[in-house]
Length: 261
Ligand code: MF3
Ligand code: CO
Figure 1 (tube, rainbow, N blue to C red):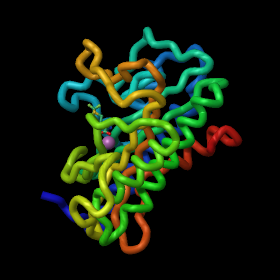
Figure 2 (figure 1 turned 180 degrees about the vertical axis):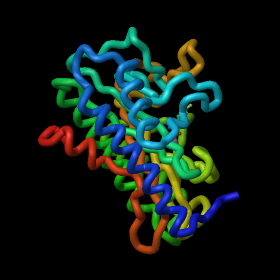
Figure 3 (figure 1 turned 90 degrees about the vertical axis):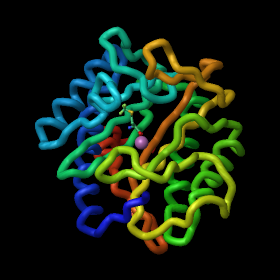
């Protein structure tokens, strides 16, 4: 069952996403060598709670934290820890959700920590391009496969690979609704997109081979070859002619200034 949202519901989703975006601005201020991922989790948790939201990853299927913090070869669902200290040259993917006024927000962002090598910066740029190219396909009358194929083509033509085990998803009153939004596929395949569908599009792109493993903590997904992974995510509403992006990286941009791309 795919729930089409009313304009009022879409505005509530924008508000939830705005709070998540503001929380990411606070996280962006803190990201630096020497900081632990547990500190980032606390910053996001407290900010979201102080502004009337619920950090809805906390307790979701037993997940123990408010953010997922995935460093370097970790792809998604890295668990924040006081033992994980960021170092110069790392990358960290931050992923979280906010529930507010009955509606979920979901977005993710991979940050460089200090000075990151050119080849890893290229992975970040291309992954963010994959996200926006996918978002451009989230318009009335296109098909789900158009999103996936567009993302896959951009990633693979740049020499990268696409994760198969995790996908984007519908979003609304629930964090995960139908449909699944794959980051791979074939143009012209899959369901036809309708105005009012709200989707979380989230390419997970790998510098090396596409295989991943799950660590013994039961959550952390990392690349089998230990090469780096990047992950960017936006929640969007399908509209005629142009997708309406409900999430925002604007607060991250304000903090990063010249370092934002
Ligand atoms: N934000 C994630 C997503 O994109 C969900 C994280 S799983 C959780 O779907 F357990 F941490 F919530
Ligand atoms: Co998501």
